[in-house]
Amino acid sequence: MPVRAAHAGPADRPGDAPPGAPAVEILSADKVFANGARGLAPLSLAVGEGEFVSLIGPSGCGKSTLLSLMANLQQPTDGRVLWWRGGFDAVGREGRRLSLVFQDATLMPWARIAANVRLPLDLAGVPTPQADARVAEALALVGLADRARHYPRQLSGGMRMRASIARALVTEPNLLLMDEPFGALDEFTRNRLDADLAALWWRRRFAAVFVTHSIYEAVFLSTRIVVMAANPGRVFREIDVPEPFPRGDAFRTSAGFADQCRALSVALMEASLASGQGAAA
Amino acid sequence: MTPLVQSARFREVGPPVLTGLVLLGLWEGTCRLFGIPEFLLPAPSAVARVFATDAPTLLRALLSTLEVTVMAFGLAAVVGTLVAFVFVQSRAVERSLFPYAVMLQVTPVVAIAPLIIILVKDTRLALVACAALVALFPVISNTTLGLRTVDPGLANLFALHKAGPLQTLVRLRIPSALPLFFAGLRISSGLALIGAVVAEFVAGTGGTGSGLAYEILQSGFQLDIPRMFAALFLITAAGVALFLIMAGLTRLALGDWHESERRPER
Image (cartoon, rainbow over all chains, first blue to last red; front, side, top):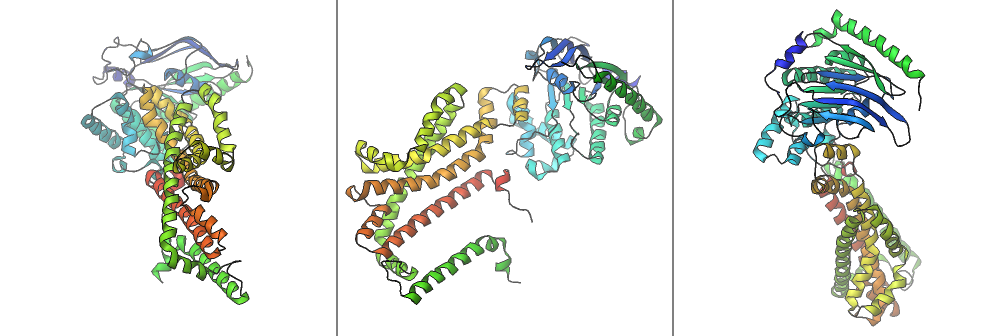
């Protein structure tokens, strides 16, 4: 299977992490909010090296909550989250870099695009010449090399999102978390950015977790899709997408793509049926 | 076809200047037509004559008032910013101190000025204290609000990348606060001038009076109404100048990125 070939990639073997350790692991974690509402039932999920996992499900299924657990922005009420079989303290070290792309571009309006992309390096104290080179590389990667001196407001929504992705990539993450990054964009822009993201992932082969509402987007990008159900938020079904990479426009119109989309649609319908009743906290 | 009329600069400045000229013309015309005596309503030309004869005295008075204003404004800006930084350290600190900041704000300066003038020996220092008191509150409240108004997404990003408190302050909180901080300064600069003039009025002719308020009082006693108008005009002009300087500073600091300073792109 072509997906497995990713594991043999020489580039991204984590330095001090145990070999073969999943990049992020949710161990029977649940989330009960302050108001007593149950966001997530205890669930377990592991995302390994070279995997591109999409989280999809009806609204309220906790996919964004799950993602923020993986980003350590929220803590589970019970259970654990592990990064490369370790705690969050070790995240950020060589081979254990984590980046997050938000729903909005979330750029600093007062800083030029280059300075925005550079922020994670500045916070980590990377020396200037090295940082400059990596910022230039990241901007070139997302096709924004000529916009380095612009301010965010001078760019279109799609370009701002590209800048946001460049900022996430500049640290050369081993794990990239994305929360509906292209949800606010029109379909043409979204398709183009999806294609670019697929190509990027194929080149860098970081572990990726991608929250989305779009069936097409999930199938196009993922090696595995996690379908979630609500009330309480839980993993409903996991679907492998064993289609070959690199994926381009030809894949979008292929029979395999259509089959996968159909299978995912069915799973989603069942998931939303399963979300209707049940333990509404 | 005339480039002057079409330029954006003219479109911005032209209408208010024209309005002013028309009003001045009407005023002058009315005074002459109905022969209104100067001690009731002097014509603009009479006021202009005062400027011609009395310029040195009036300008010296203006300078004196401006000195008090600028010193008070600077004091208010520095103290206000420091207080705001203290406020954002903890909600408890803000809760215990904020009511007193409000009390400072709502007490009319005319009412406390006599007290301050008695307490502070140096009259000039007393004037500065009064004016600074008036100018202080907008800086405190706006800067506090600004330091608290941080994009939650960016705050998450900083947390994710393990930014320290100092990094977060310098790279996130302070830049986020700038638009509101400058809005506060703009209000405060006008208030400093008002505070300075009011304090001068209260100090009256008894003090080492040399400011514009003193000139207005003196002119009133002497029924030299055109001179009164001339002093009044200078106060207004000083206020407008202050406003323009602050607007320019704001544009300099935020013009590149903040929506409020965004110029329509042509």
